[in-house]
Length: 288
Image (cartoon, rainbow, N blue to C red; front, top):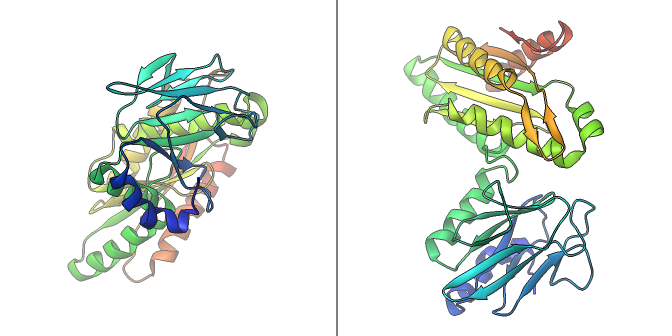
């Protein structure tokens, strides 16, 4: 039985310790009434059909999409010849053994597999609060919390701070032409590429539908522009491989440096104005 998400994280912890079965927790799209889905020791089916143990009413999911089966020493996930495939940690699989913390994707829906280890429970609960379920980037709420903390720090120590806003060019056209599943894959791949070149003290977050933010703590405008140009080059240099084919992707970006005489809201607004300038000037460029 699925419990409301508001109650699940607290109530299910005791259940998870008491049981030895595995479970799934939905991380994208995040739904307020989603809960932890317990997997029985028998075969557990996933699909669009009402007969499935876990029904996902979405055209991106096949009627009988996948199955999870308990076999010693663990759980095994099998693709039931689905149209859009089954992915574990963003890799297509026919069948594989599941490990605690694995990300499972069925069409547009992403779950995390848990085995009731307390550390996995807390890691998942924290990730749900701070990370975007689709891309793995930080979410906007966490980004704003970090920004507010660093604003105070910059004021006290007179340190620089810069912001890059990145927007995928013509993203609606990508969705309309290739489908929303491919659009999601573009978002995931962009996030993956940018996170490859960001440092631990830089905060990369999904700021909106196809908009991302990169906070450069202790970085001035010149350093931020250099990083933004690297992101821009990394995205446009190689087309994105998706389930709907190869898609060329470009981004526009706006860069601003924090002004200690102004609040954080104006800091974001100035970066957004530069982003708007980049888009009005033909897109596929960085403005500062």
